[in-house]
Structures are given as structure tokens and as C-alpha cells.
Image 1 (tube, helix red, strand yellow):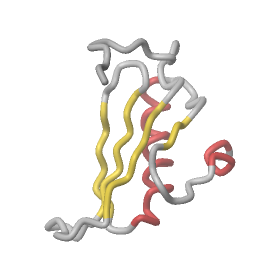
Image 2 (cartoon, one colour; image 1 turned 60 degrees about the vertical axis):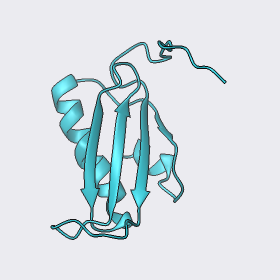
Image 3 (cartoon, helix red, strand yellow; image 1 turned 90 degrees about the horizontal axis):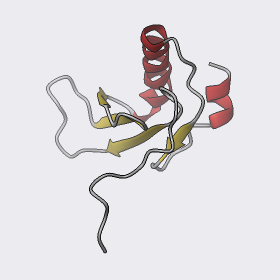
Image 4 (cartoon, helix red, strand yellow; image 1 turned 120 degrees about the vertical axis):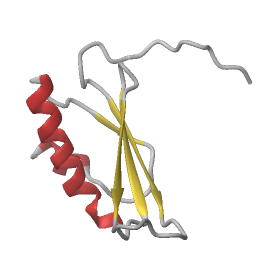
Length: 97
């Protein structure tokens, strides 16, 4: 299977689409005690943010903090979050943040 070197993004505006994933539980904790990490990938620019987490339950609060900081910088609303991970981060909860 081959992939195009340049894929066309469906995102037309900043933060239209943000892909996310969580990795863990990692066998070796970080120095700060983190056992998970969360990645958020901007759908249009492919810019990546990585957050280390002590608990998987920290995903939602970390996402909300990220969303607030990015909305402040970009002055754009997050319209859609496409998840590529297991767990249960509810999109209905995201709409209310």
C-alpha cells in the first residue's frame, strides 16, 4: 500500500479538525510520574502538541486547558475533534466547554 507524500486536509479553517491520541500505560514512569501521553494534531498544519499525563483520567481536563489556550491564540472555535484512541472522551462534553 502506498500513501501520497502530500495528503489534502479536509480542514479549511484553523482548528476545524484536531486529531488526538493517547498512549499508555507506559511501563517506565517519567521523572514526574507520568505514565501516559496525549497528542493533539492540527488537521490543517499538522502541528503537534504533546502532553504527559499521570493518569488517563487527566485527558479531559488537559484537553480543556489546551482548547482554552489555543482559542485564545487563534481566536477560532474548535469545531470538531476526531479521536483515534480508546476510552470515553464524550464529544457532547466537549461541546459544553
